[in-house]
Length: 310
Image (cartoon, rainbow, N blue to C red; front, top):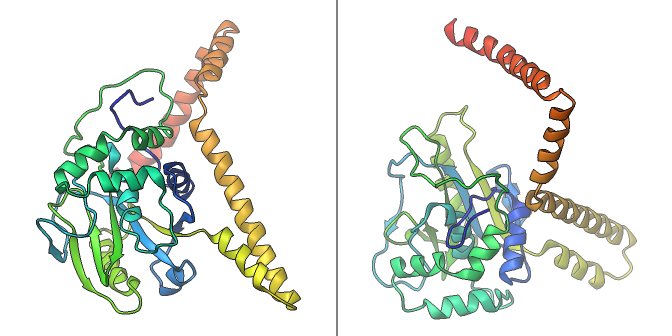
């Protein structure tokens, strides 16, 4: 578990992010994962209030728009701690939503009001030290048998980074806490996604085709609530009603699975594991099983070494 003042690493998963948003106190929103950059993949999710993009950070400058310095209307916070960047990306989306029907809740409203006059660095410090936000984030901390000191990533370590893309008053902004300010990618007319899609396509194309190091999620409206409203508004169309009921069933099933997965993520399995190891040791089975596991690993590694040498 993360100790007081620290932020844990969390999984980039729509079920995790949807629960984070709910626990922050927001209503009417959920997170969906995008498996494609095709136009139809975005169309099915509209309205989209923001995108969260995870990629392997290599330190090189990305092709970008204009970086804005000084005061801006867009909420932007500098990233001051590595492990908080997932929550920072979510909050960057939530605090820039312009739809008055979306209720972001008291916690985030008070935080936004409190930091409204702060510069990006002070906003970042305030976010990192926001107890309630850190508490929700750390509810997904993995259970560890021992506490380890966090370390600065080495040169060859894989480092992953979250950035957010949001529409704000007719323009598209990229919110990357490692930059000095929000990045202005230009204006849009009807659909802000038309500006974002080529940006993401270009960045992904810069990496090796065999490198699966990306994850894209969309912050969207509550699909279940929307479907229920659609069902209530129908009159006399049995076929359409059946279709919507099936979609409601699928959405409820998906959320039930998310709930189970999140319970498993948060559960502490260590006492069970330790008890099982103790029983195996008492029966004299632990050492033979350990040796057998090592043999299996060695057998799998041998073909890899031979392949790399050929």
